[in-house]
Amino acid sequence: MVSVVLDPLPSDDEMRALWLASWGDGGPASWQPVLKQSLVHVGAYDGPRLVGYVNVACDGGSHAFLLDTCVHRDFQRQGIATLLVKTAEAAARQRGAKWLHVDFEPHLTAFYRACGFRPTEAGLIAL
Image 1 (spheres, rainbow, N blue to C red):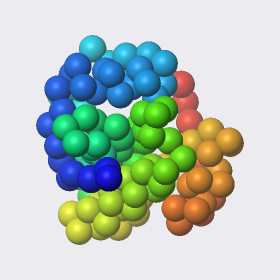
Image 2 (tube, rainbow, N blue to C red; image 1 turned 180 degrees about the vertical axis):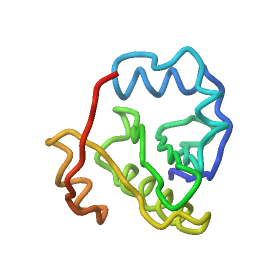
Image 3 (tube, rainbow, N blue to C red; image 1 turned 120 degrees about the horizontal axis):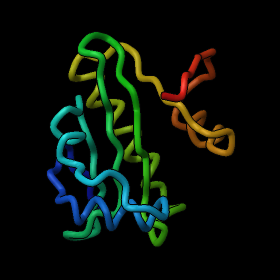
């Protein structure tokens, strides 16, 4: 059974292994700055093994941003991503956020709608 942990401190190696299995690349050189600046981050563990992760960044006020939702390919389609998002939502609310934003690719629309997100207009500039 997978357990969910608020604000775990996985090593860069653990994060890299999860990122590789989820997205096919290693992600940033170090995850530690991301973990330290989060409003909350949530890890899903199968025993000691990190198998899922989501991050919530914050503007320091009422807006929070869901980022980097991922689940190891061997653990997908088991409800873990939904559990991560719902846990992150509750923690962000408890920590003072009033709005939780998420950007996603079109193929993830059904997933995020099932998690309770509704569509909004937004803008984006690639930097």
